[in-house]
Image 1 (cartoon, rainbow, N blue to C red):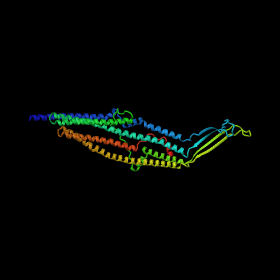
Image 2: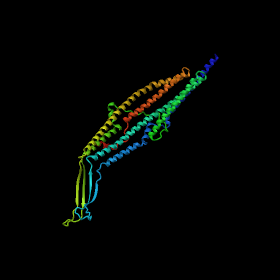
Image 3: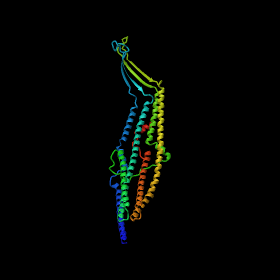
Image 4: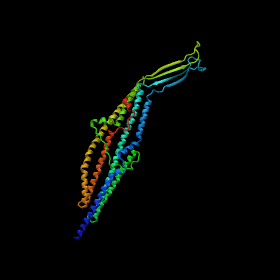
Amino acid sequence: MSSILNMRLKVRWVLLFVVFLSSVSLCSKALATDLNFKSDDLYPVLTLNETLKIVRRNNLSLARFDLEAQAEHEEAVSNNYFPDPTLFVSAQNLPTDTFKFDQEPMTQLRFGIRQAIPVGDTLKIKHDTLQMKSEMKYTMQDRRWLRLKRDVEQAWFEAWYWQKTLEILKEDVVFIKQIYDITQSLYGVGVRNQSDVIGAELEMVQLEEMQIDALKNYTEFINKLNTLAQQDIASEPLSLSFKPITYRGVPLKNLPAQLKGHPDIMHKAHSIHIATQNIKLAEQSYSPRWSLEASYGLRRGENENSSDRPDFFSAGVSVQVPLFSAPSQDSRVRSANKHHMSAEYARDDALENMVFEYINVQKKYFISLDQSELYESKILPKLAQQKASILTAYQSDRTDFDHTARVHLREQNSRLKYHRILANQQKMLSKLNYWIPTETPLTPGKTQQDIGTIQ
């Protein structure tokens, strides 16, 4: 009887000791959480806006499109002039017996100029086409930046999620260490068996494996950010707090009109304009080709009446009439028309796909808002209460280890899923803002005024 009383007394002291250790651990955890919360202010962290600034500053393709646009503009200016005239000099009708310049009356030194006239409106059409190509480069620059911005945001929120996962797993290590210490203490007085101790050790090993996997994924997306930034930005951790991406809702009836301003659609609209200009250019082949010529002939010697021979002046117009090349010209015009239709189909197809993709992502985003609200208001608070109560029950030997581990695993999975939902929401907003940007284009087109005049 006395041995049983001694055993119960030992168990009570062990439980009191375990409760004391648990209180100390919880206080340490709260202090560590508080320090982690303030670490963003104490230590440098990498925010999303800073990452985007680095990517914009370092990416050379943005500057490349600017240079290409300027090159197209300069080429358009150079094509807006007549071709250079042709100057010629010739000695004509020299007698082959003496090669004397004054022997024959038709012998002359002739010099002159020829000027080809561009066909129809060829100059204006080529100038307008090259101006549009210049504007297309600025559109491609805007499209490149929107894609870069979207890719950076996708990678940043993935890296943020895995960094947050590492933080959650660190907190779980503290909890499992508590369970392990309690189990060892109770096992020492014969209340728990060895399988519970081994189970706690396995839980700690599994947590370690999850940390390794999370670190691997975090490193993968940090390296992707380094690649996009063309710079090593992994020396600083990501900010655990971030400003959510702004979402600007668009009514469904206004969606196609809004998406027409996207650089992808604008690029295809520019292609339609160029195809229209190519039709006009092909139609110019029906027009005649004109050229002008003027010459002056110097003569020496005297006429039969002893007067000086007068000089010659000549002027003429030549025209190339398209009489025998009609089939070739017709085929050229038909080809240009088919390219124009193809460009219109490409624009319409891209717009339709963009509309449905936008609606699909928008619907999933609204559904995820309800899901995250459910986790915030009900699931996570209830699981937190259950986790705290199960720890007390396990300390008091009112529940077994397997049930305690299941509660911990359920609470851990729910927290990870909640943060996955938050990360996915921001990634969906990133896609929506890619299609309908909330900011102005990166570089406004320098030839926009000219293009407006052309259209």
